Image 1 (cartoon, rainbow, N blue to C red):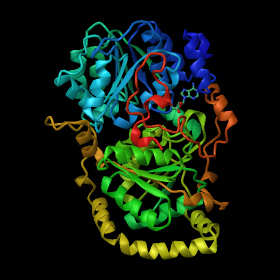
Image 2 (image 1 turned 90 degrees about the vertical axis):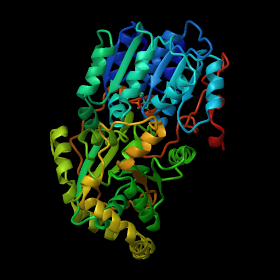
Image 3 (image 1 turned 60 degrees about the vertical axis):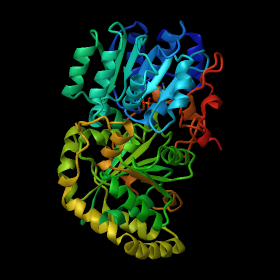
Image 4 (image 1 turned 135 degrees about the vertical axis):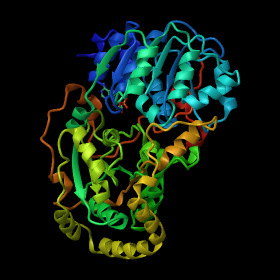
Length: 523
Ligand code: AMP
């Protein structure tokens, strides 16, 4: 199937061609025709499948006729996190560059007044996190009576983060006659209830998450004897044994993110943490540095890293097995995106065992084991003498500097029950701002990247030696961009300024990247 068979107009096809896409992904091929016909759809797809374009492309097409009135947006996209909202805004900028549509991004951590000014000028596409949108609505700054298209993205994440009551409240404020698309990687009963209650005879479109993960991601499991300290040592060896370009390291607990980042940094790795306690500008800046290749290892929680689209990320490391099996799919979906090759390696101690069962049941097969002996041998002969000496010294100093945090983290491992599971939490008060929610959910894992390992990747015993059976890539995955670039090279973001706060309006210029780059990201 080709894009020009989907019913999209020439300006859109041109923008798609400029983005380097040759053929639609399966979710795009399924969803776009239905949405262009004005149908409601339920899309079962995770990030990495091209689902964002599957709704942004038809939205641009549908909205290309008509104009927005002040404070009355014509379409609404709800996203669970600020970062995801910013990514969707970036997608609109890419695909809508030949259209005269105005867009506004309503996310927490950004001044209300700028957002209000944008709303006053009239927006065609409003991209928002639920808490911030409700705040604006309650202040009378936005009216939702003219919304013709609603997209609820990452509905299962909305559920995890306790946003469903807000989503439902927002839906009730919309006109009943509208088009609705809901996307979710999984379909828990609460989400099913939403689709039954608020959608009109929706078409289901589905991409098999587990199958798509298996196609492009080489997975491996490293069993570790011991606790937090042993796991950290094992991670260092693993990272050094891999040819890491850039990677996310996921932890289940926010406090472990900080400890692990400190430990990795003291061992000479180029790592940074991403968690909900960080100020929004610091989060955006860390992400920009990661995308620009200044940071190799991003240590993050599930919540902080949700849905991030980092092109060409070479590896994902699960420092902990996620507590919820579908988080495994979300995590490994950070690599091997859009047909690129990816690697996802998971560390497991005895305390991870119960979660591992759930993951392997979801995958329908065991994760292939990584041989720890091979890794140690590899590590022993992999680095230069100078590097090994530095590591030894760093190890010694780290065992001092991280003693306290290790002890605490070990406690956490012994009593995982004291970690509140993020799933199906309900917010109890109006303190349910997006920020508060994101942060409270940060008992979940975080990830860190490390660059040092790429220079040490001379090992011939690497986890890549345990690949899954090769599967031929579907045609859509072989984009022009991919074939013209080296998979293993670290690529920059499409714009070099990935975090979008808001897109300036001005007909004819709307969506131009240079128009909306927030000041704090301009270099
Ligand atoms: P998403 O699932 O929307 O987060 O998209 C994942 C990645 O796939 C993004 O980097 C998109 O730019 C890329 N992508 C989306 N559609 C296509 C396509 N048809 N061909 C190649 N890459 C695509």
